[in-house]
Image (cartoon, rainbow, N blue to C red; front, side, top):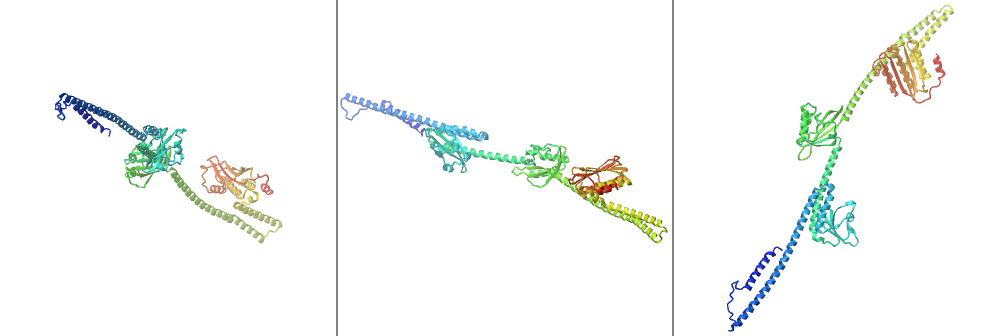
Length: 614
């Protein structure tokens, strides 16, 4: 509108110029000046001349007055035109400055780091606040600092004007300068996207009340820009949190995980992969890290004959091409001198560009458990076989013992009894003539009957030592050593701190061990002497049988039936059994069985003393 005044004023100036020329200099304009005025012309020539001069002057004065008025109007119009032009220029500059600052606001907020976002926003908004005459502007978001403040106008997406700081949110009130007597006005511009209001910009003005309505459009545009940037920043923060969460999940997995692109290059790995002592699986001995082509690595492993390399290459190619095989590859590696097992799984990467996810799970513990289980099963089978052999040998020994007892009864006792019966029959058929001969014959038969009784007692004792129940373990072992010393082997017996009240099963176990150990010394060691010791040690009863005979190799291997029988007897009571032997240096057999805590044996019974003196 201001620019339309220019041509009008130019035309007006030209018209005034032409009029002035016509009025002042009519001859110059081609107007005839010598035509007489015939109306009322008097014959008096001077009178006509005077009248003509006055009319001319009057017209001149009128033209001059008209020209002055027009020029004055023209000057006034030119002054107004300049003022309007300057105002338009000022408004244009203000608009350009606002648009430039608005652009700088969008760029600075979009490029600002999350740590400096608040500082950048405050600085950019402060410049815009100068343009709208505001003293401050602050961002407020819904629920900030736990404040439940809300405004119906803002919730509806409308701007809200406040004349008192008491109606502002708590966070904004804390920043507003509340001076008594100083007026303060505030305009809240909603920040929302897609119809959802997430906060507001609070524009504050102190002193004179600001006409916010004059800046409504500007502030609405600023609010839209800030809302869009905040939405983008929230989306970036959410994406970054999602990426960090995915990375944290990957790093939390104990499996070694690598992500491959479609060509097989490793794009990323988790911490377990990066920190693994092995090199990611295949091929062994080659570093496999981000940037390495895993397909090439597996191809090299296949060419080098690494077990599983060809199958791994095939699975990787299928997965990178988007195919799922579901197969797993088990392989072993050597790490720090230890053998470790891994299970390799390859899955397609679910994205448009394709790729694969490679997972190596450490199954070493499982494999070791499987190996231990197999070894345990083997040991169980061996033990089962040993038990069957032992049962067979026990049955054979039982049959041999029965044969021995039957042979001893038949060949020895039966013969002696038959002979005794024959002699008694002869004595009854043909008795001696004299009483002395009868007495001598009866005495001889009595001696034979006594020997038979002694042999029966010995057989009974070998089957079950009845002295254990009546005399106790110490007395029975001592008597057995004394009986053995009278026959073939000198057995030295000693005891120390033995408790009283030893359970019958413990006494029988230790006696049978001592009996079998002394029998082995007599049969196999070649020694002429042996020592037998019974000790009470901390709630246990210890039996030790030692000799200085030939000994044997591998003293811990219980191969003989007697040794197996001794071990089984002791372990059945929860005790321990050991054999220490070296060739040429003798053998030590030790059995330790727990015994209830009782007082040491202080005295022996009368029966025990009689048995020892017998």
